[in-house]
Length: 216
Image (tube, rainbow, N blue to C red; front, side):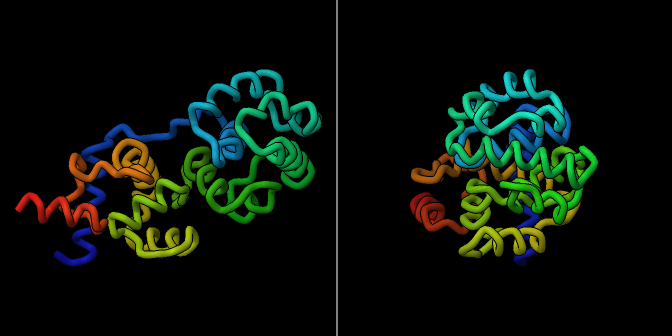
């Protein structure tokens, strides 16, 4: 099996395991997508989803968020960690009002020019709010893709570059969610469930190799 064939086999297996994989954050427009994604950094989607209904109720538009202050927003989002998130969200909203006519930008360059928005957050917004093919690499995608062998990189940036080559462009957005679902449910950080993993025959992770040899 060639490297390309193996990569496609991994993607097909992931699709079979997680046919309904998609965003687990709750949002309904680009503004909400941006806010929820900023809040999700080093937090959980479950916690963010508890917080955002009140945020979106009281600050329903970019203009509303730009008009408030970090001090007012902080009590809403404190449970998602890092006081800087409140500052970043308010400043990003102000940037959008001042530089993008109140519309969340739909380019990587535009999004990463906003306060508190890195490549991962920008790619999540591009993929989920605008349907633009993007490879967002969070901790789950980084861990799972390198364990499976879709990437062989020591950094998020290089992992993103390698995944963009290894995965057909029309599958980037779906593959992002497949990898996240697998990371949360099976390929966990500390104790991956290799024995019950549906991809262990294709996986490059040393633990999977042990499982294969033990079954021979």
